[in-house]
Amino acid sequence: MSYQTGFLNHFATEAVAGALPEGRNSPQRPAFGLYAEQFSTSAFTMARAENRRSWLYRMRPTTAHGAFVPYAGAELLGAPDGSHTTPNRLRWDPLAMPETRVDFVDGMVTYGGNAGIGVHLYAATASMDARAFQNSDGEMLILPQQGALRIVTELGRMEVAPGFLALVPAGMRFRVELLDGPSRGYICENFGAPFRLPDLGPIGANGLANPRDFETPVAWYEDRDEHFEIVQKFNGRLWTTTIDHSPFDVVAWHGNSAPCRYDLSRFNTIGTVSFDHPDPSIFTVLTSPSDTPGTANCDFVIFPPRWMVGEDTFRPPWFHRNVMSEFMGLIHGVYDAKEGGGFVPGGASLHNQFNGHGPDAESTRKAMAAELKPSKIDDTLAFMFESRAIIHTSKFAMEGGLLQHDYDACWTGFEKAKLPE
Ligand SMILES: O=C(O)Cc1cc(O)ccc1O
Ligand SMILES: [Fe+2]
Image 1 (cartoon, protein in one colour):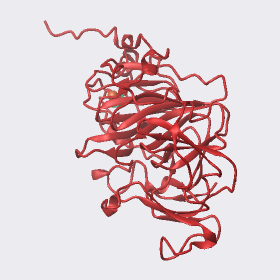
Image 2 (spheres, rainbow, N blue to C red; image 1 turned 180 degrees about the horizontal axis):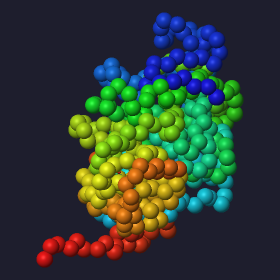
Image 3 (spheres, helix red, strand yellow; image 1 turned 90 degrees about the vertical axis):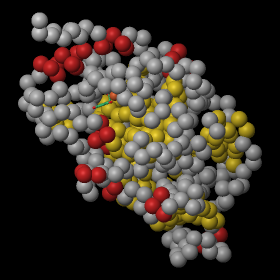
């Protein structure tokens, strides 16, 4: 597998020498009888810095297909209708692996969502073969938690193991192959402005996720004249059609709208070297801004291994109530605000708008008693999708058997403060 590096670069790549036109996008007759196609993930008229599009040179035009009809699988995928939304702090046990053959498409399960994002987990036991998924509703941020994936996209192939993220543009066709057997992970579906690197402000020109660590596949195609099912998510529902060849027939492409992967261990984690626990925005990997400056449609934030050195400081996350809603998951290890257990790899939690949460009683007791020498939080990777809007939960999330009904109890047993007489 080879990659080109950089975030949102203008890449150019060809799997067959001479396939990529030079000096123009749409020659009268592209090489070898290929067909040129513009793939736009921003409006044509978007400001240059925000403009995203790629030019694809493929063996057949994408237009060669019949009508899409409603798709019957993936019954647990869909937009929550609001009837299961609660202000309560929620936490879930891990999603079980299916006992039958289930691929990535049918293995997606919606936990929550709002107008800006969809929050899903997937649990799959089979690779997709002669089918592809296309999400016309939004781009997909995929975080494997168990099992490495090979994601075959129209623009090339990338491998993503647990600890990596994959980002697939809205509208792009892809299939997911399992490299290590049963696989599970998390998905943030982004209906808003596409994810980008956050501004660094006073941090300066370097730090957090550095652009050069993002990797985009080189062009790759397969020449398979057989039936392929295309499953499309459109307007919150799934649709299907069949074509007579592989959709992965793009021989060359250029442009800046492309899938990428990123190894989260490359994140340059920044924290306090004096006192107090900084706001978790310091851990933002990618952000999808809204039209209100400073208020994200969605921030993707990680809690990676890091040194804790704060003096006279309560080091774990503080107790807090937040206008932003927070969905969290755990790739591996223990999260420093939940030392009392219950938040486990493959599990999840949700703390919706203004509902108080923070360290459990066990983490609080330990942090208040700790000797404050430098200590390393190691072997851990938690993450958060933080959204400006309430995250509505699905029926499955509330009634699917994984919800921990005793979650509130992790915040009991705190002693009352004793004021001077
Ligand atoms: O709630 C959480 O665990 C996430 C979180 C972590 C942190 O370090 C500060 C604030 C915050 O919401
Ligand atoms: Fe929080």
